Image: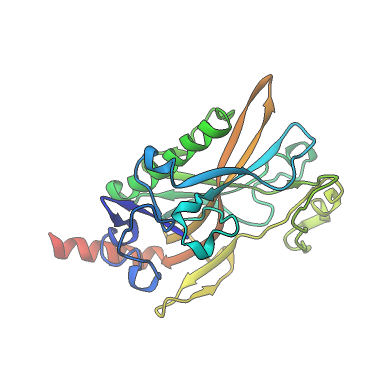
Length: 282
């Protein structure tokens, strides 16, 4: 995974105290030029760091998918034999979120395409550190737009002191090509079986992993419902890119989608760790 940097320091080490859990996170602290491990700080550098490619076979519908992968020259020779998707580590305070398997779907057929899982990451008042992550995603978004076309969504998903991360709940079932299999939904995750009845046209093909970082640096799996607003978390994201036509306009829909959400500190512990460090420094 790749980590955001600020003035050639990785973001996790810049949070007050040990909020970023740098020692247990397995991060490489020495920032190297043109390395896939470090997200570039400028748009120009981004152009030599990533590539947008077709994902799977070209679809026959009006919409097709793209993937953001690392530029081969940023990878060591042993890793260049296959495409390596860009996966970025973000950190911040957990705001509003819904990462249940069906997200915010309201159980109506017409709302299936727009159903989302989402996480809002907040700065907690540490704007300079958090702002580096906001700028990194803005540069990535601009790079993707340059490659596949202007965004059709009108609302920006990244604000000054918050990041809105989103992932589509459902995937359209295609008549051909390789697709991930559907996950098994239970009566608890899909009351009434409405989502399972969509299986011919739409499927849920993923679960957002959730965990908690232990003192030894290992992540322990936890239930999504154990996460709380205000927890300090680490979120792994990738670019979910669609290209097509809507309302007589051709362009892209870009989301930064969650693969995993790991709690580094509970809200109560994060307040002690962060404020304690700032009190010492002051």
